[in-house]
Structures are given as C-alpha cells and as structure tokens.
Image 1 (spheres, one colour):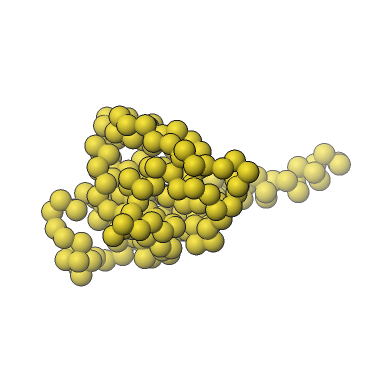
Image 2: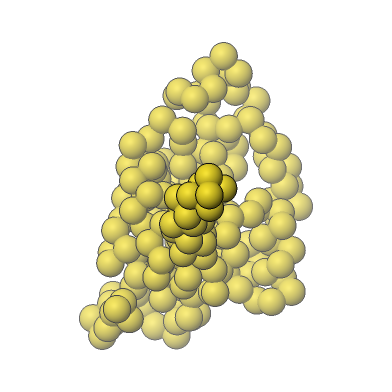
Length: 183
C-alpha cells in the first residue's frame, strides 16, 4: 500500500516532466552544429548569453522554453548556447577562439569577453546580452539580433531564417506580410 501511494504521488511529476521535456530546445556546441549543418543544410541559431544577464535568463525561461518556439527551432535550426564570457576553446570556421583574459575567480559574474563573441555578435561594433546570432549552413553570420524577445517577437525572425526566406526578400518586406503560425 505504501509503495502504491508513493507511486501515485510521483506519477503526476513524471507526466509533467515528460510533457515539458519535448518543449526544450536541443542545444549543442558550435563545432557539432557546423558539422551537422554542412550535411543537412539547416541554418544555425546561437544564443550568446552570460551567467549574470537577467534578460538572458528571461529569454531562456520564457522564449526557449515555449513549446511552439522550441519545436520550430528544433525542426529548422541547429541550436547553440554560447557563454559570451566563458573559458571554452571554440573552433569556428576552422579557426580557434579563446578567452585569454578569462578570470576563473570571476566565474558566474562579469568576466572578460570571449574572442568568438567579438567575431559573431557585435552590432555596430558593440556587444549586448542576450544576442541571438543567425548563421547559414556554412557558418557565415546572417544577422546578430540583440535583446530579449518574447515568443511572439522572435517568431518572424525565426521563420525568416528557418524557412530560408532571407535569400528571397528583405526582412522589412517579409515582416509586412508575415502571419503568425502560433496557436
């Protein structure tokens, strides 16, 4: 009887976890994403974030955990989560990028900016967090988009790059005729 009660109490938690497990974006590293993109032609989406950034955490919790947004990203992109101030050595387009000024004692707070951040994420020479970087299948930056976005705000940008419409029309023209697919 005790085991039955225990099982019945845990069953809703297991179901909840299963229902939401599919809603998460399937993140990978940049090197793996680039190799996969060369094979299947999907573009990349890179979440350039930091551990101390409040809007970065909001983007993750509210946007990347939205079931419709996550499903679209998983179907149409190779998704990369990249710590803009981390210590990882990253190979991007055959070149190695590091963070030579990284201070391990500052882990979890503001730190030096990773070389790759400066390569892929600046807008008008400045970086801000979060930045979502869209890349083509060959690892060429299509657009870095800075700032927090809700699922409704990010949807047209995802569709523009995910459906590969960026080579067919300019984004302002696309945006004028865009109709949300959200349910």
